[in-house]
Image (tube, rainbow over all chains, first blue to last red):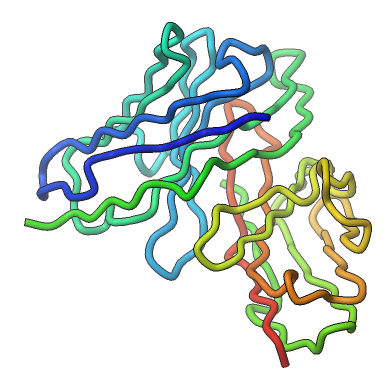
Length: 129
Length: 109
C-alpha cells in the first residue's frame, strides 16, 4: 500500500528558503503515469496545488508560485523534495505530498486524471521571525 | 486558469439523509473531475475520479456525476463519518494547471 510522509523544519524565518521532503514507500517514484505532487492548505482554508514532478525530471509548477519553486527527485531513496524561496507569512500552511496519477497522450491532447492519493498528516510550516 | 466553484459552502444535514453537492467549472473539463473528502485533522482522501468512478474502498453511497462544467456528488444515507469537507478538483490541461473548488462542509444538523 502506498504511503507518503512529508517532513520539514516546522518554522522558517521570513525571506529564507523552505525545504520539504516526501518519502514514498509501497511504490516507486519511477512509475510511469505517477506525478509526485505538493499541495498546501492555509489555516482554515481550502487546498492549493503547488506543483508536481515526473520521474523523467519534468516539473510543472503553479503559475502563482513558479518563480520561487524548485522540485527534485531522489530515486535512490524513493523521495522527492520541494524548495520554496523567499518565504513570507503567506506561505504559512500545512503542506501535503501526494501521488497524482494521470495518463497523458497525444502531447497533452488526451488526458485522463485518476486523482491524487494524498499522504499522511502533512507537515506544518510556520513562517515567522 | 479554470476556476472551480462549489455550492453551497455549508450543508446542515441529519444522519440518514441524502445530500447533493455541486461543483461548477469556469471552462470545459470533460470528465477530468475528482472529489475528495477531508475530515478534521486528516489529509484529503480521494473519493471519485473521472467524474463518476469511485476510488478503491469508497462506499457505494458516494455517487459522482456530470461532465463539462457541471458536476455533482451525492451522498446517500449519511453516516456519522461522512460529516466532513468535500473538495472538487480538475486537471484537464497539459501542462497541468490543477485547481480545487473552495469546498463544501457537510455538518450535522
